[in-house]
Amino acid sequence: MKYKNQLCALTTKHSKSKAIAEPFSIILGLQIIECNENTDQLGTFSGELERTGTIFEVLRKKCELGMEASGLTLGIASEGSFGPHPSLFFLPCDHEELIFIDKEKDFYLRENVLSLETNYKFKDICYENEFLEFANAIKFPSHGIIIRPADWVDKSIIFKGIQSVGEFKKAFHICKKASSNKMVRVESDMRAHMNPTRMAVIGQLAEKLAHRLSILCPKCKLPGWGLVRLLKGLECTECDFPTEKIKEEIFGCVKCDFEESFRKALNTGPENCPICNP
Ligand SMILES: [Zn+2]
Ligand SMILES: [Zn+2]
Image 1 (cartoon, rainbow, N blue to C red):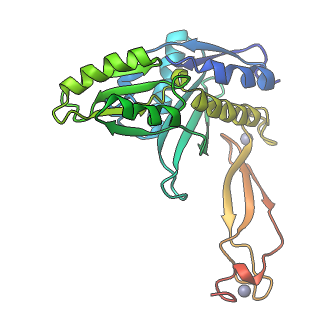
Image 2 (cartoon, rainbow, N blue to C red; image 1 turned 180 degrees about the horizontal axis):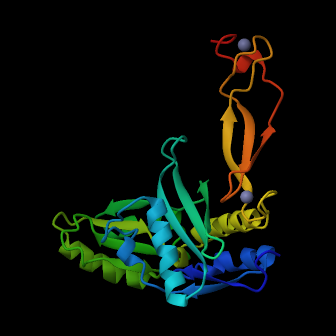
């Protein structure tokens, strides 16, 4: 095992080691140490503080926070975003990213996954009994919710991590009172410790990342060898035209420029060809 008995800092306030520690320990022999640095300065899901910079910049900064605080040279951090799926219209999806940084070997590796396994949802309600349907849909109370006034003039009025009907009622009345149109926004709490569905997706991604780190570059022997891009242009059997179908998978290293390509198929039928089947 490449990282046997080494320590790795996981920057999180939301107990993500529950999802990440096991695959990293089993596949790499690496031990995850949680660093509870305040990452809210990089932005929050619930929107009190907008995220600035690209997802990569946020991930890298978050990862470095924990590495600096712990003095460890290995770090990991996770970032999720939620919204409509880019190709399956209107279906909500969870886009998760993980970054692993090895300061000594001087490389980083990112992995991501787009999952339809999510309870991401929000609704504006006026009456308490409208909550029931929403609560069932997002698997409340095993999954937490966030409540705020729908107009949200005063950003300090927000209740997070609500996991009981009693807490909901209390928060609902405060928010309704503060709301100019008497509407209250209820939304699924997407923070990992409030959301077992999201925690499971992070776990699947951690396994993917750990597996990739277990494979070494055939040339320089650094960890993280894997798929780096796909090459389109699989030829048509009838006319040899390079179609949009995947022709090759390119595997690469996290650091050196060595690459290997693997042919996916010999060719594709004329039904996939814009010349033969326009
Ligand atoms: Zn290499
Ligand atoms: Zn053709």
